[in-house]
Image (cartoon, rainbow, N blue to C red; front, side, top):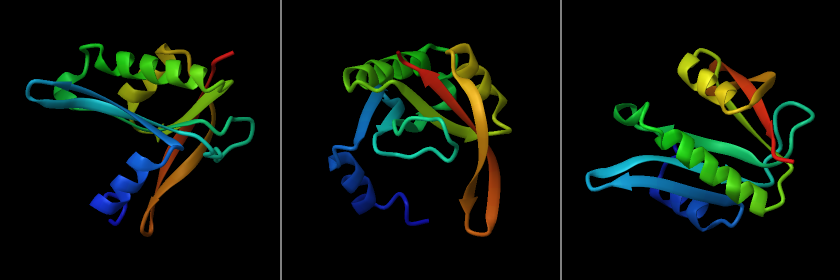
Length: 130
C-alpha cells in the first residue's frame, strides 16, 4: 500500500487542505484526527469538509481522548466557517458508529472503501455545525 509512505505523509502534513491534531502522553501517541477541506463526499447533501482520518489507540478507548480530539477538530471546522462536516466509517465498526451517533452525527448514506479488488461497506455520517 503506497498511501502511508513517508513522502505521502509529508505531503499531507504540509498541505493546507489538511489539518492534524495529535493527542500524546509520555509514552507516545494516544490518537489523532485529520480534517480535510475541499473533500467531496461520496453522497449528496454533504459539505466538502471531511474528518478523513480519526484514530485512537485501543488501549486508550473509553478515556475521553476521542471526544476531546473530535471537539478540537470541530472547533477548527467552526473557525474555518464550515457549516457541516462529514465522515465515513466501516459499517461493521459498531463502537465507532455508536460514538459518532452519540456525538450528534446522522447517517446520510453508504459508500465502499476499496483495497485492491476488495470493497468494504462504509456508512457516511454528517454533523451540522450551524
